[in-house]
Structures are given as C-alpha cells and as structure tokens.
Amino acid sequence: MKAAVIRSFGGPEVLKVEEVPTPEPGPGEVLVKVLGALVNRLDHYIRQGDITTELTFPHVLGLDAVGEVAALGADVGQFQLGQRVFAMPGYPADAKEFGIRPTTIAPSYSMRGLQLPGSYAQYIVIPQEFVLPDTTGLPIEEAASLPVPFLTALNAVQIVGEVKEGDFVLVHAGGSATGLMSIQIARTLGARVATTVRTSESAKVAESAGAELVINTRESDFAEAISKWTSGRGVDVAIDSLGGDSFEKTINAVKVRGIIVAMGFMSGTEVKFDIRNFFFGLKQIRGSLTADIEDFALWLDRIRDGEVKAIVDCALPLDQASKAHELVSQNIAKGGVVLLPWG
Image (cartoon, rainbow, N blue to C red; front, side, top):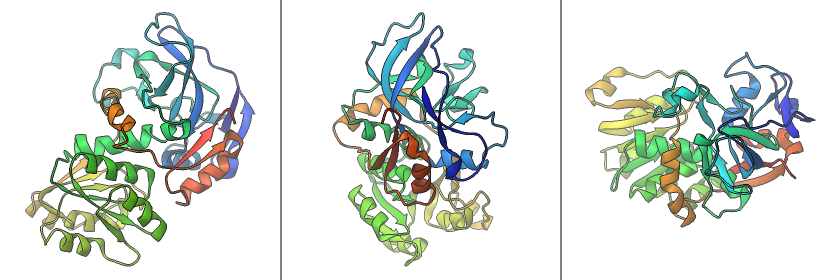
C-alpha cells in the first residue's frame, strides 16, 4: 500500500510517499481502508521531533481516519465489509485496559501516528472496540475533519469544562479546527461564546460557526473585551489552546470560581501568572485531552442534523502531505486539511 512517511525529523519536506506493507487484521481487529485522514497540529509537532525523539523510521503520521471496512479478523461480528466507519485516534495497546475510562488514563494508552502506525496510509488496523460506525452521511472530507478536533473540543467544553445553557464561554483560536468545534459545541449546549482570532479571515469563519463576540488580538486586548462583554463579571469557562504568555490574561478573564480548561500550547509550553488572583478568585485550571468513543457516538445524531458542522479548508492527495503540513503549521488553513490516500 501507499503511505506518506518520514525517515527523519524536520520540516514538511521530510514527508514522502512510499510503498509499505499492508497490515493484516488479527483476532478482534478490523482492517479499515482509509478514505480520508485529517492533518492535525499534533502531526506537525511529531514531525518536528517536539513530542518525542524516539520514533522508529520510517514512520507514518496521522491520528484521524474515516474509511470503510476492508477485512475482518477472527471473532469480529458487528461490522460489515464496505461499512463506513470512524477509527478512534487512540486506544490502549494492552487489551486488558480496553474498558478503562477515560481511555487516555490507561497506562498503555497510545496514539495513532505516534506510538501506533498512522493514518496517512491506504489501510490501517484497529481493535473492533475502537471502531465506530459512521452514521453521519457526510462527504468523506467532512467526516474526516471530525474526530480529533471534535473529540478534543467535546472533552474540553462539555466534559471537563462542564459548559451548560446560559454560560459565558471564551474559546481561544476560534479559527482553528478545534476552536471552531469548541464554538459550535458550546453554542449547541446553550452557551454564549466569545473567541479570539488573529486575522479577519479567521474572524469571518468564527462568526459563521456561531461566536457572538470575535476579538482580533492584533487589534484589541481580549481580557478587556471579555470584561466589557460580561459587564465585569468574567466568563464562566475559558477553553485555552494557547498556553504561553497569554495564559495569565485568560485566568483574569474568568469569573470568580470559574474554570480554565488547558488543552494546548500553540503559544508556548511554559506559563507564568500571579497566583494571588487565581486562588483569591477560587478559580480552577483543568487539563483536557480527548473524549471517548461513547461520547462521540452520543453526538452523531446532532452532527448528522447539522447542529455541529465540520469545516473543511481543502482535501489533497497523499503525495501533497508536505503542502498539507505547511497549511496547518503556518495557520493558513481555515478549517480541516484532509489527505485522500486513494487520490
């Protein structure tokens, strides 16, 4: 089969399409023909060697996969050949831990494209427990734009952030794939949403996703804008994918007893803040990774009904993986960038 692989860490140019062995499903496993694979920012960090320097080369990147069932291993009965499915981006390597929830706390939890072979390939193998029938009816490029951004946003907004109807919510990086999902999920839950962006193009996309207040941080101080928007009260929940130097302002933008959900580091991995405002305000910082397959399943009807929409920037053939990484890493893409392993 064809796969986009890296043989060293480096820039987007290290991605090359090669012929690699096609995997075979073992007992309890499903062979999925990958029809679409989203390029995530994490793929960019892995490619650069920012996450780990201990990969075995050649290495296939890619967390997300939507496709169809191509073959079934022994003892797999609930899927049909040709059935459209989502493949969860991570799961425990040890089958004894398959039932642990949240899945991410399992000691052997592994991610596709990092510890596991990635989805920038024509086929992947995955345990049946982490294959979800795709009932959305969406085109491939839209369905492929869902899993990691949606699961990341769902966990941050609903599960960890506990956003509910009537809440005021701040979502950073509203033009990013995860930011756009966070805006839509918060709105679907009945919240009022403000978001930060850095360009007018991102502002338009964030508005179309349902943001009530869009703050261009090149032009305005978001903490001041949030204070005015909430009449000095602050937001109930802030979804922070930035980290870095702006984290203290995010804490200050949250109300007394409010929640800051830390789920990224686009602006840097180190943060510094005056702890007095934090503890006098009885505020909480909560870490967030990704939701589970059951959480995804509960939202499929809402996705099918259009309450949450996948926003796609472009779909590219596998041999343009390097271009796809440039679009994502340089924040050029406004929405999902999807690779099509079959052209």
